[in-house]
Image 1 (cartoon, rainbow, N blue to C red):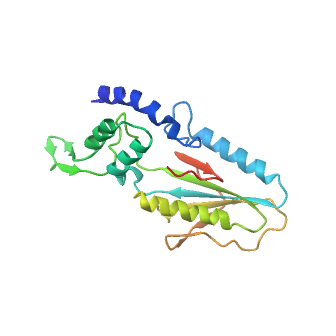
Image 2: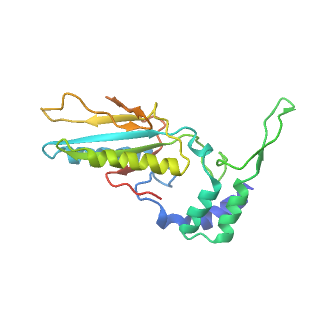
Image 3: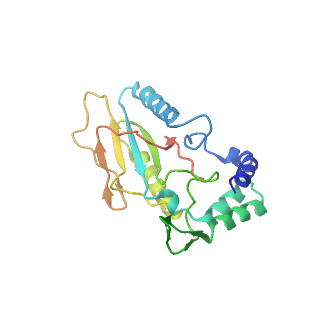
Length: 218
Protein backbone atom coordinates (compact mmCIF):
# COMPACT_ATOMS: atom_id res chain seq x y z
CA UNK A 1 0.00 0.00 0.00
CA UNK A 2 2.83 2.44 0.83
CA UNK A 3 4.45 1.74 -2.54
CA UNK A 4 1.16 2.56 -4.27
CA UNK A 5 0.81 5.74 -2.20
CA UNK A 6 4.31 6.88 -3.18
CA UNK A 7 3.44 6.42 -6.85
CA UNK A 8 0.26 8.43 -6.34
CA UNK A 9 2.08 11.16 -4.40
CA UNK A 10 4.68 11.61 -7.15
CA UNK A 11 1.83 12.27 -9.59
CA UNK A 12 -0.35 14.27 -7.20
CA UNK A 13 2.17 16.80 -5.89
CA UNK A 14 2.94 18.51 -9.24
CA UNK A 15 -0.80 18.92 -9.83
CA UNK A 16 -1.48 20.78 -6.58
CA UNK A 17 1.85 22.63 -6.25
CA UNK A 18 0.51 25.81 -7.86
CA UNK A 19 -2.42 25.86 -5.41
CA UNK A 20 -0.24 25.72 -2.30
CA UNK A 21 0.16 28.94 -0.36
CA UNK A 22 3.78 30.18 -0.62
CA UNK A 23 3.62 30.93 3.11
CA UNK A 24 2.89 27.32 4.04
CA UNK A 25 5.96 25.97 5.77
CA UNK A 26 4.79 22.65 7.18
CA UNK A 27 4.87 19.40 5.22
CA UNK A 28 7.01 20.90 2.46
CA UNK A 29 10.24 19.30 1.27
CA UNK A 30 13.37 21.20 2.28
CA UNK A 31 11.64 23.72 4.56
CA UNK A 32 10.20 23.55 8.03
CA UNK A 33 9.43 25.32 11.26
CA UNK A 34 12.80 27.13 11.34
CA UNK A 35 12.01 28.80 8.02
CA UNK A 36 8.60 29.88 9.33
CA UNK A 37 10.14 31.42 12.46
CA UNK A 38 12.81 33.25 10.45
CA UNK A 39 10.24 34.63 8.04
CA UNK A 40 7.89 35.72 10.82
CA UNK A 41 10.69 37.39 12.80
CA UNK A 42 12.04 39.16 9.73
CA UNK A 43 8.64 40.56 8.79
CA UNK A 44 7.92 41.63 12.36
CA UNK A 45 11.29 43.26 13.08
CA UNK A 46 11.33 45.03 9.70
CA UNK A 47 7.91 46.49 10.39
CA UNK A 48 8.83 47.52 13.94
CA UNK A 49 11.49 49.84 12.52
CA UNK A 50 8.67 52.14 11.41
CA UNK A 51 7.67 54.82 13.95
CA UNK A 52 4.48 54.13 15.89
CA UNK A 53 4.21 50.52 14.79
CA UNK A 54 3.40 47.35 16.69
CA UNK A 55 2.98 43.68 15.81
CA UNK A 56 0.30 41.36 17.13
CA UNK A 57 0.61 37.64 16.40
CA UNK A 58 -2.23 35.20 16.95
CA UNK A 59 -1.17 31.57 17.37
CA UNK A 60 -4.21 29.40 16.69
CA UNK A 61 -4.29 25.96 18.27
CA UNK A 62 -6.54 23.25 16.89
CA UNK A 63 -8.13 20.25 18.57
CA UNK A 64 -7.21 17.06 16.69
CA UNK A 65 -6.95 18.94 13.40
CA UNK A 66 -6.54 15.87 11.19
CA UNK A 67 -9.14 13.84 13.06
CA UNK A 68 -11.88 16.25 12.00
CA UNK A 69 -10.99 16.50 8.31
CA UNK A 70 -13.84 15.78 5.91
CA UNK A 71 -12.82 13.56 2.96
CA UNK A 72 -15.58 14.93 0.72
CA UNK A 73 -14.42 18.50 1.30
CA UNK A 74 -10.89 17.36 0.50
CA UNK A 75 -12.05 15.77 -2.74
CA UNK A 76 -13.78 18.99 -3.83
CA UNK A 77 -10.68 21.06 -3.04
CA UNK A 78 -8.47 18.64 -4.96
CA UNK A 79 -10.66 18.89 -8.03
CA UNK A 80 -10.65 22.69 -7.79
CA UNK A 81 -6.85 22.46 -7.78
CA UNK A 82 -6.92 20.55 -11.06
CA UNK A 83 -6.77 16.96 -9.85
CA UNK A 84 -8.47 14.47 -12.13
CA UNK A 85 -11.89 13.30 -10.93
CA UNK A 86 -10.85 9.62 -10.98
CA UNK A 87 -7.83 10.31 -8.76
CA UNK A 88 -9.79 12.46 -6.32
CA UNK A 89 -12.49 9.79 -6.16
CA UNK A 90 -9.83 7.15 -5.44
CA UNK A 91 -8.54 9.25 -2.54
CA UNK A 92 -12.09 9.71 -1.25
CA UNK A 93 -12.64 5.96 -1.40
CA UNK A 94 -9.39 5.38 0.48
CA UNK A 95 -10.36 7.81 3.27
CA UNK A 96 -13.96 6.65 3.74
CA UNK A 97 -15.20 3.46 5.40
CA UNK A 98 -11.69 2.92 6.71
CA UNK A 99 -11.63 -0.06 9.16
CA UNK A 100 -9.38 0.21 12.21
CA UNK A 101 -8.79 -1.80 15.35
CA UNK A 102 -6.26 -2.20 18.16
CA UNK A 103 -4.24 -5.37 18.73
CA UNK A 104 -2.25 -5.89 21.95
CA UNK A 105 -0.85 -9.07 23.49
CA UNK A 106 -3.07 -11.30 21.41
CA UNK A 107 -6.23 -9.33 22.15
CA UNK A 108 -8.04 -7.55 19.32
CA UNK A 109 -10.62 -4.83 19.79
CA UNK A 110 -13.83 -4.50 17.84
CA UNK A 111 -13.40 -3.02 14.37
CA UNK A 112 -14.47 0.59 13.97
CA UNK A 113 -15.33 1.84 10.49
CA UNK A 114 -14.42 5.51 10.13
CA UNK A 115 -15.35 7.88 7.28
CA UNK A 116 -13.72 10.97 8.76
CA UNK A 117 -10.14 12.10 9.52
CA UNK A 118 -6.89 11.35 7.72
CA UNK A 119 -4.94 8.23 8.76
CA UNK A 120 -1.64 9.18 10.38
CA UNK A 121 1.72 7.67 9.60
CA UNK A 122 0.99 6.94 5.95
CA UNK A 123 2.74 8.34 2.89
CA UNK A 124 -0.25 10.48 1.92
CA UNK A 125 -0.97 11.69 5.45
CA UNK A 126 0.87 13.46 8.23
CA UNK A 127 2.30 12.07 11.43
CA UNK A 128 0.94 14.66 13.81
CA UNK A 129 -2.58 15.24 15.09
CA UNK A 130 -2.05 18.91 15.93
CA UNK A 131 -1.17 22.00 13.99
CA UNK A 132 -0.68 25.68 14.73
CA UNK A 133 -1.51 28.60 12.49
CA UNK A 134 0.10 31.99 13.02
CA UNK A 135 -1.49 35.22 11.83
CA UNK A 136 0.55 38.40 12.21
CA UNK A 137 -1.02 41.83 12.21
CA UNK A 138 1.29 44.72 11.30
CA UNK A 139 -0.38 47.69 12.95
CA UNK A 140 0.30 51.42 12.80
CA UNK A 141 -1.09 53.55 15.60
CA UNK A 142 -4.05 52.19 17.54
CA UNK A 143 -6.23 50.92 14.68
CA UNK A 144 -6.19 47.11 14.84
CA UNK A 145 -9.60 46.61 13.23
CA UNK A 146 -8.17 44.97 10.09
CA UNK A 147 -6.16 42.49 12.15
CA UNK A 148 -9.19 41.64 14.28
CA UNK A 149 -11.33 41.12 11.20
CA UNK A 150 -8.75 38.79 9.66
CA UNK A 151 -8.67 36.63 12.78
CA UNK A 152 -12.46 36.43 12.91
CA UNK A 153 -12.67 35.64 9.19
CA UNK A 154 -10.13 32.86 9.69
CA UNK A 155 -12.13 31.48 12.62
CA UNK A 156 -15.25 31.44 10.42
CA UNK A 157 -13.32 29.66 7.65
CA UNK A 158 -12.16 27.03 10.14
CA UNK A 159 -15.73 26.43 11.26
CA UNK A 160 -16.89 26.00 7.67
CA UNK A 161 -14.12 23.46 7.07
CA UNK A 162 -14.68 21.54 10.33
CA UNK A 163 -11.41 22.63 11.95
CA UNK A 164 -11.96 22.91 15.70
CA UNK A 165 -10.12 25.86 17.23
CA UNK A 166 -8.96 25.27 20.79
CA UNK A 167 -9.58 28.79 22.09
CA UNK A 168 -8.14 27.91 25.50
CA UNK A 169 -4.73 27.09 24.01
CA UNK A 170 -4.82 29.82 21.36
CA UNK A 171 -2.51 32.67 22.44
CA UNK A 172 -1.68 36.16 21.26
CA UNK A 173 1.80 37.69 21.39
CA UNK A 174 2.15 41.49 21.22
CA UNK A 175 5.50 43.06 20.25
CA UNK A 176 5.53 46.79 21.02
CA UNK A 177 8.73 48.83 21.40
CA UNK A 178 6.99 52.20 21.61
CA UNK A 179 7.75 54.41 24.58
CA UNK A 180 4.10 55.28 25.02
CA UNK A 181 2.21 52.03 25.02
CA UNK A 182 -1.52 51.68 25.62
CA UNK A 183 -2.24 51.00 29.27
CA UNK A 184 -4.60 48.17 28.38
CA UNK A 185 -5.07 45.97 25.33
CA UNK A 186 -8.49 44.67 24.44
CA UNK A 187 -8.14 40.94 23.75
CA UNK A 188 -9.55 39.36 20.62
CA UNK A 189 -12.68 37.33 21.33
CA UNK A 190 -12.99 34.06 19.43
CA UNK A 191 -15.91 31.69 19.94
CA UNK A 192 -16.94 33.62 23.05
CA UNK A 193 -13.47 33.34 24.64
CA UNK A 194 -11.11 36.27 25.21
CA UNK A 195 -7.75 35.09 23.88
CA UNK A 196 -4.96 35.34 26.43
CA UNK A 197 -2.15 37.81 25.66
CA UNK A 198 1.22 36.29 26.60
CA UNK A 199 4.79 37.60 26.87
CA UNK A 200 6.31 34.58 25.08
CA UNK A 201 5.23 31.60 23.03
CA UNK A 202 6.97 28.25 22.82
CA UNK A 203 7.75 27.10 19.30
CA UNK A 204 8.74 23.58 20.34
CA UNK A 205 7.18 21.09 17.92
CA UNK A 206 5.37 23.98 16.23
CA UNK A 207 3.96 23.30 12.77
CA UNK A 208 3.25 26.72 11.32
CA UNK A 209 1.02 27.55 8.44
CA UNK A 210 2.11 31.15 8.59
CA UNK A 211 0.12 33.72 6.64
CA UNK A 212 1.44 37.10 7.64
CA UNK A 213 -0.60 40.23 7.11
CA UNK A 214 -2.46 39.00 4.00
CA UNK A 215 -4.43 35.80 4.49
CA UNK A 216 -5.01 33.34 1.68
CA UNK A 217 -7.84 30.87 2.13
CA UNK A 218 -7.77 27.60 0.14
